[in-house]
Length: 135
Image (cartoon, rainbow, N blue to C red; front, side):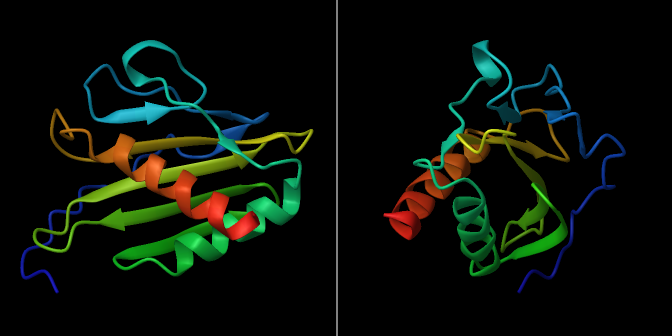
């Protein structure tokens, strides 16, 4: 349990309008499957299982330590991941594509300039856990 909580304020640009997640800030503390370049990352593959894969992802996130599922609506979710030591919070958003072929993801640190690759590693870990859950 963290003695210090450096949560930061919840951003007001969370959500998916028309399946689109907010763009990452210019600072290197965010990745998004809906962007290219330094912020770009591949979406999560549903292996053709659409809603089943999205539900499995919810289960994966809920089973993780230091994680709170904040919002779950239809094909959208928002979770807060916090570091165990200082309680820094990263916001992770996922939205299932209309055709169910992929889950777009955005992971962004609330505080600081750089995340030292933490958000990219988190998305890759979610990718691995989701693949195991739906195989």
